Image (cartoon, rainbow, N blue to C red):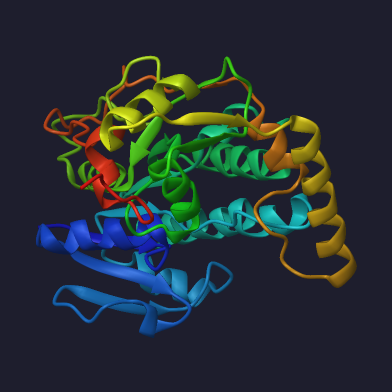
Length: 313
């Protein structure tokens, strides 16, 4: 069994990854601000601290075989807000690994948005973090997932609830295509990447990979509607949300956050530019260097467990 360091273990992806690691019998050092946000389980060592604290990062990585870096900022008033975690925080983690555990493999969870850093401050900050990782000299793998969903993410519950009632809000172009990935499959991939015997398989070392749910060429809005229609046994109507309205709402949200000096909601101008981008399709050609990993959950099989979805009786 391996000893794995984990950041972001109290978040949506992190919780599922932590659970998968512990269920597999690995020992996990988990960095967290508030220890009450993590379960009490055998094999789990809680490291109280943040990416700003060198001493906490030293305790986090010491004695570990691999580091899974999930913690990241998804909202901010500007690039600096996001880069403080996504770039500077990543740099401090790299420094800790380099100084105290240089042979540990670093699995860096990025975002497919980093493919187009000019779209948003978020995308630019994630790309900056990737560049720090790729120039670190460590044994690293960068993972760029597409849209990740699952039963533990209440933020998408309104989307699934509307879909179950026969309505799909289209927030991107009609001809857009996008990949999806269930959180359980992403967690499984991260675990496999961190725990494979690197001396036997270095096929993914120092590579950037993307993952999807096994659906080649992703989904279109029409295909999502068709899947939901078949599942619920009734028609699903697509309702397009004009890009102009999205841009207006994003600008209002950002202005309000800057005036109030508060954390902005997810929909800001940069996020809108991501939403209206036409191509968010991933390629599973470079699968994790562990052949036993395969995606197991497609949208049609996952719908029943999503918050807000109600299957037809």
